[in-house]
Image (cartoon, rainbow, N blue to C red; front, side, top):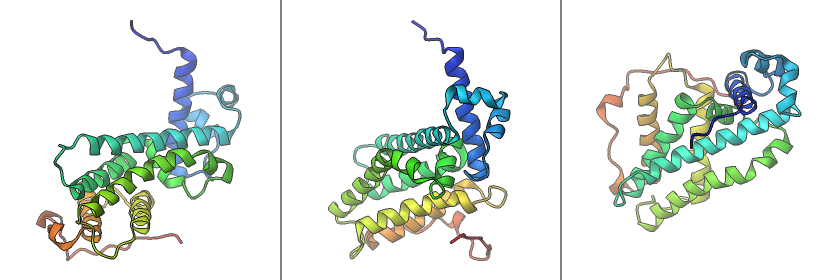
Amino acid sequence: MMTIASPMNATRERILAAAAHILSRRGVAGTRLADIAAHAQLRTPAVYYYFRSRNELVAEVMREGQRRVREHVQHAISSAPPETPVIDLIDAAVAAHLRIELELSDFASAVTRNAGQLPPDIVASLHLESAAYHAIWRNLLERLAGSGALRPGLDIGIARMLVVGALNWTAEWWNPDHDSLDNLIATAQSIVRNGLAADRATPPLPRDHVRPHETRSIPFKF
């Protein structure tokens, strides 16, 4: 039997989608309920019917974004053939993370752009989902180490935080008008692979993605 979404649920989803859109572009500090309501084609008081506060709405967007990133990356890993080398699974995870973060989902972009700007109560509410995502990467790195293909001397915990942190940070500086997402993914895969894998498991970056003549100034925030 077909399930028909109720108008109440549809409106709530519209508010969440609007909030994700605004948060992914303006950040928490620049997001107002009035802007979210306008994007959802509602009056501002209507938002309070579904969410008690701005923080409750922001937290729900963050949880949904985390869930989408985790499920997308896990699907990319699980879809690979059983005999796939772990370093290739890591390549797939890098690609899946960047593609959903930068192209496929405002919810995912909202998470990666605002993770460092959230109040403590929201951060605490996201702990379980965050831990579940990091567990995916921990498992990949432990499997890489168990196969003997991890570069000697690497600390798995530090490596995991560096990789996930770098992937998240791309939302702050990457500009699709300057370069393609495919080139970003290929470059990120090469850096991660060459940083993690022992030399015998590290192929060169494809020539199509090597552009030594090009330099670009990228702003960073500290």
